[in-house]
Length: 321
Image 1 (cartoon, rainbow, N blue to C red):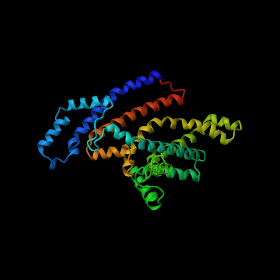
Image 2 (tube, rainbow, N blue to C red):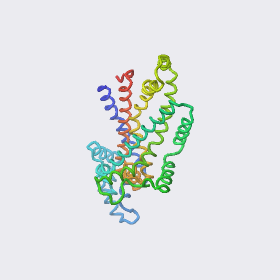
Image 3 (cartoon, helix red, strand yellow):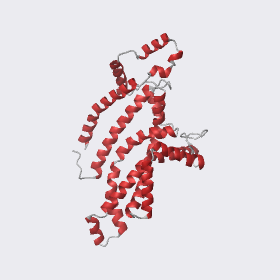
Image 4 (cartoon, rainbow, N blue to C red):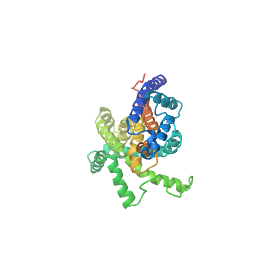
């Protein structure tokens, strides 16, 4: 497995290189440039604009600019944010904890709800409860995430007032206190549910269908013929086998959650990486935008690798070599 992991990590290098070229090219094709996000070209002296472009290296040939950018990236330096006037890595470091908290919360909600609902639906298939869960799942799969977010804000934040509609912490709350952590949890729960809703619905249906299919297999008939209790058959034999494929999807979920957080964080004004990405696109803060795009790309590749490794760990029949 170590050899396989090293081989996969080395194989990521050309992929990351190609994606970096695409990210850099797309940033250059977008209207405006880093300087237009820093000053207003219509109300600035043309000589000053030209001087600034020269200082920032924007007049250099594109390949030269790319090599300069990649040299910094390899050394962990993504440059400075033109809008926030701070190093990009420092800015991302401030926002990243919020996105990690949101992503982990969404993962916990997803797997917990999918396990409970999927187990119930698989165990009591075609019952009233199963139909209600299926209806909820189809609704969650059909509604776009931004519509679900707006509905959730209207119902739970505005009408019922159970949770805040925006932000990640209440105003005037002192960091490190119990009130701080409670406020953090209240601000995170709603975007986490919206972020994990689609995966919850998909995994619930997957677990339900797999349990129904497994319940008709020969080893289950054998267990029933031996007089094994129905609850033991489902908990020890069927559920254990059906839950393995879902566990292996954890690697894909990590990358998907960070990508999906862009929409969710923007709607909830949640100050994480996704919200920062949208802010940087609107402000043409290219250094931040390219850094986040590269980070999401690398996370996706690592997520795929984790998923493949989990396949080998949970199912001994799969040999990664």
